[in-house]
Length: 385
Image 1 (tube, helix red, strand yellow):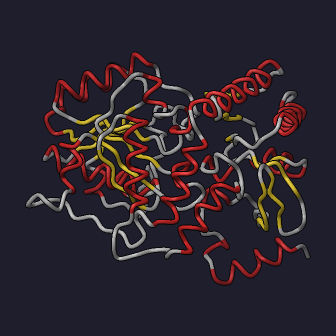
Image 2 (tube, one colour; image 1 turned 60 degrees about the vertical axis):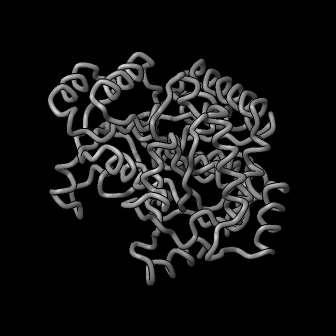
């Protein structure tokens, strides 16, 4: 029996289906990571792979990047969490303001929680209930943004309008009918689960126009796409959102989420104002995540962003030329195999870890040899399928 088989057997006794995190499950059971270093992972059976998953896009500098790790250790050595704020959250908020132009920020512990806070902010600011979102886009696991019916009350579903992304007529008609009740239109400009296809700029401009016209807020979920520009993908589109949710890369490999917006919108959370929204979080803005995130973004400057995006574009072009269907932009690539599970295992056995849906997320520590190996392995497995 392999180490992974033994671990999974133990896991099924104490964890439902042996799984805590749905996205990492691959039947019959996933391998178990033992160690990560730079661009590679070694599993508990000693098998080493190039990590083209990077914890679902969050590890922009790969595993155990020395400067990021040193910042986290230094912060942890002074205390991992406090019943007081620290300078680290101020430092990171200032960097996010500089990069996005959004004046105020609040921190939490995940992308899911960031979207929850974003929706609460929109509803509190506008005094409206309805949320418009788009079919197939993933915004975390809170009731308002999941497609599943099981476990989600009818009343919650009734407060959400789900539309096909890119359908100008549908969103225009919806806003004409319900616009005075809509708190926010929530969009991911390149949704992974909907195919990692970049949104049409004309459609994004229409959303901005419609929200202005009807007094709603435009919220852009950049939990995944923030890595594509110094100010996120929205900056590359030239659109100014009213609210932005972040996570993943801004935590340097530690749990994190954030919501940014103009002062007048985020003031709904200000304890200085009467009737403000109260939102706590025992580990929100903890110094370890904040310090690691700050160093991560310092290293991921405009030059690094451009270089990594260029690498991703070249890889995507290489795959497409070889007959492999691949979508995305910059450092994010999505594959579309006919049999996702079989392909995942073929790639893994041959030394490449991708997302369980075919997502590839590059890191700055990948060498030319790593990229070439990813391209070669994917092409050999998928070009003829």
